[in-house]
Length: 158
Figure 1 (cartoon, rainbow, N blue to C red):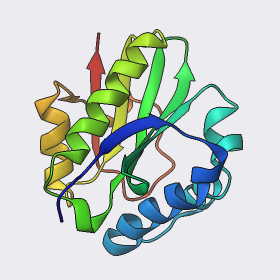
Figure 2: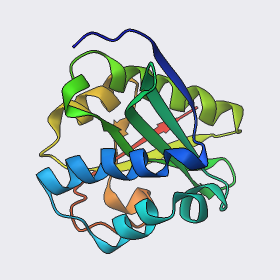
Figure 3: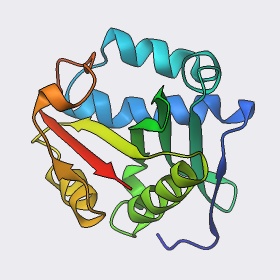
């Protein structure tokens, strides 16, 4: 499947279903949906946007193909979370494009540090983060992750 018109833009209310479905697909496949997933994916406007975060959606034409969230974690501090690419679109650089866009947007929001929590069973994602300069840090150096699946912790400082 080729990408005809990839574009990335900020989340709109009509994107809530796609944001939830894109994330539920990979989480259910690799782990299992946890309570914090239900909260974040069930009401992204309340759980991500209202506290000062952002969500970015990637589209191939009108088809939602990926997403990434920035969760506000304090002044100049954001968490990269809920990054997903539709299985049918993986391997086409969409994840790289979404992450690049998310990092650029974080900088415009005044971010000094980005952090994330991942899992060793997602080596492609970890490699992508490393390629952007994220470095592995001890769990104690990032805010508590509410996810039992988290066993990799990384940050990127500007």
